[in-house]
Length: 196
Picture 1 (spheres, rainbow, N blue to C red):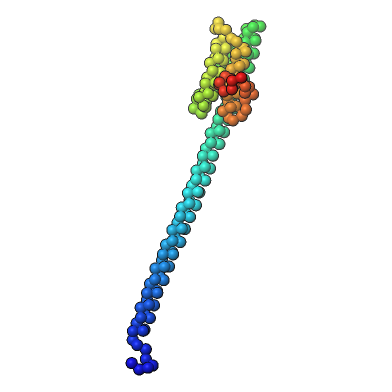
Picture 2: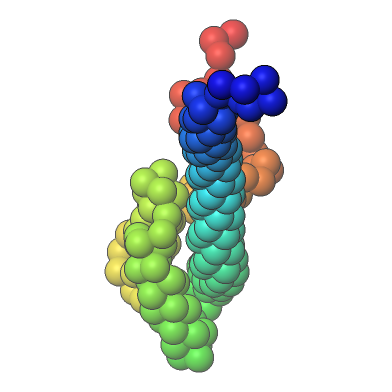
């Protein structure tokens, strides 16, 4: 070998080292890309999961709001009809003590009774057991008063009818999350008052 020449093995070693460097560089880049891709997929999965949870929470909230609005509509309708019926029954009982009841008043009582009963049928579907029980008690007690007005010989206690009417209204208010007017009496009835 002459002094100006490079031995043959030096370019071969340099070429091999270059190829090894390129291959190792590609492997390192591929490994880093895989790690970056895995982190990105994990981040996207987490973002998707949070979005699904948010959408589920929104759907649940909308569903609760829908059913609360339906209960509000139904309970408002029932309470309005029930109070009209109860007031007309009280007036009819007063009229019976003075003189006979008019056919018009009796027809109005029966029509209100039918509407209250129809509204109660919806309460059975949407109301809680306590609400359904309170409405059923109202309905049965006032049906007895209606039978008295229609001529059956039954005893009617007006104070009891007023109490039943207050109880159903307070029960409806509690179910809607509104403080009832007669809270201590309601809590006592439900055995929720602490002992004195």
